[in-house]
Amino acid sequence: IAGITQAPTSQILAAGRRMTLRCTQDMRHNAMYWYRQDLGLGLRLIHYSNTAGTTGKGEVPDGYSVSRANTDDFPLTLASAVPSQTSVYFCASSRTGDVTGELFFGEGSRLTVL
Amino acid sequence: GQNIDQPTEMTATEGAIVQINCTYQTSGFNGLFWYQQHAGEAPTFLSYNVLDGLEEKGRFSSFLSRSKGYSYLLLKELQMKDSASYLCASMDSNYQLIWGAGTKLIIKP
Image (cartoon, rainbow over all chains, first blue to last red; front, side, top):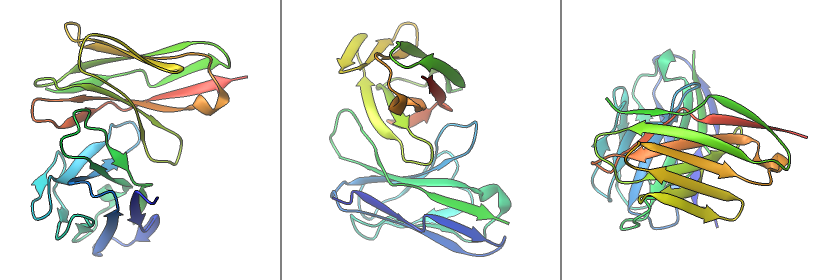
C-alpha cells in the first residue's frame, strides 16, 4: 500500500531555477493539497484541488502553480525559485464526503533554494 | 484574524500523563483536529472533535469546548515512542484547516 508518494525527497537548487515537486496517490481520493511547513509556523496551504480538473489557491499561493489532470497526480511547480521558498513541502489527500476530513500526508519533500 | 495557540514544547516522564492544550479562533468552526508528527516524518491523524466533550481512543483522548474555543489532547501511560510534535488544527467555515505551530513533546525515561 503506497498511499501518497512524493518526489524528490530532498533537493537543493539555485535561485531562479524552475522546479516541480511530484505527488501521486493511489487511494482514489478526490481532494488533494500542497502544504509547506516552516520552523515555528503551522502548516500553510499553498494550493488545493477538490477534484480532477479543478484547483484553488490556499493561504500562500504566490510563486507556486499546480495542475490536476487526473485523480492520482497533483504536481507543484515553482516557476522561478527564491530562497524564501526553502521549506519542507507536504502533499496530502482526503476522501470526499468524509465528515472527519482526515488528511493523509506524503513523506515530504525538503527543498533548499540557494 | 484566525489563530491557533499551543505550547511550543513540553517535557514529561515515561509512564506518566500529559495534557497538551490548544486554543483556537477561527471564522466559523467545523471541527478540531489533532495530528502526530515524528521528527522528519509526515503528520498522521490522531483525532477529530466537533461536539463538546471527551473522545477516548486507547491511550489518547481529545477534549473540546466550543464555547471556550479550547481543546486538549491527553496522553496516558507515556511511552518513549510518543516523543513527537502534536499539531492542533481547526477547520473554519470554508472547510479550510488552520494549523497551530505544533507542540514538541519530549519524553524522559
